[in-house]
Length: 97
Image: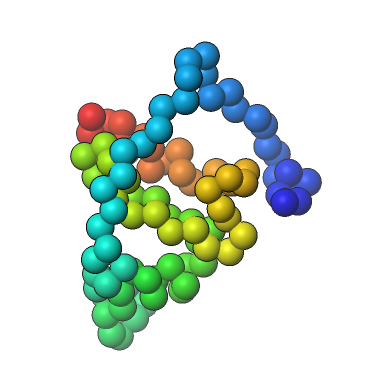
């Protein structure tokens, strides 16, 4: 991944303690949820929206469990991922705790 050559990046410590894994309770129906985007004339489903916005991945939490995970493009569970707007999502999540 050549992203480190394009953007300022830094390695962030995962902390002093052991990593904590997330509990999973995957909801198979999320991909078929429909909504009407601002710039569309017809409703689209969640899966279609991923291909329109072209994210590298999507991870949804509900009640401290992962309910949806989708890796797109070259993203896998094991490779380094560039986190740009994710911090805003986690901030919103932490306020609700």
